[in-house]
Length: 219
Image 1 (cartoon, rainbow, N blue to C red):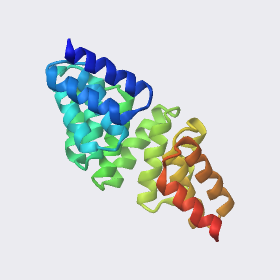
Image 2: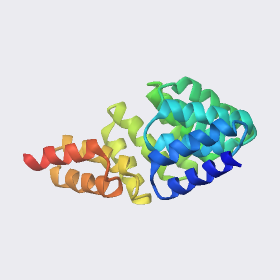
Image 3: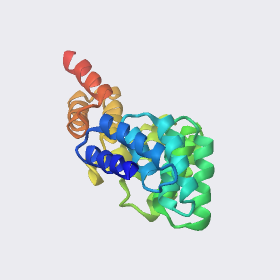
């Protein structure tokens, strides 16, 4: 009963966006109910909110162990692996899901994301171009493809994909930020400022975007 009480307290804190207390409560719940399927995914997501990717990855690993057939959990685990710096392990995780669910678009996008993490931009572009052709409405695919093009110094293609990403999903702060970097390099400072303002509007804690915005406005 104590475990359940801590769990519900943690969930309440998470809903209230109080991530620190949420994590503390869910950690207690996880110690009291280590086999509980609900605790670990919630704890993992809370860690991700604080960009504590290594801890998120460990919590997702527990979650997957308790619920191995859950593709959505596996996908989150793979993403946490990539975020914590192990893109090759992430790719293996995504491939496992696609064996069971080959038409899972989100996971197809994440395969491209994993290749970006591994520095294989050519393969990332190949994977993500295929997704975008079949599913032109998926903003995250355009964003990741834009990043892969940018890393390959194919800037016109990068710009086109990032513009499409923010058009489809204006809440993608990172897409605004990446597009701004290309515009700034091209000397289009007004456009870059507009994109950076959009980035910080969507994510007020986006330190890099605030810094870049300040740098341009000082010029």
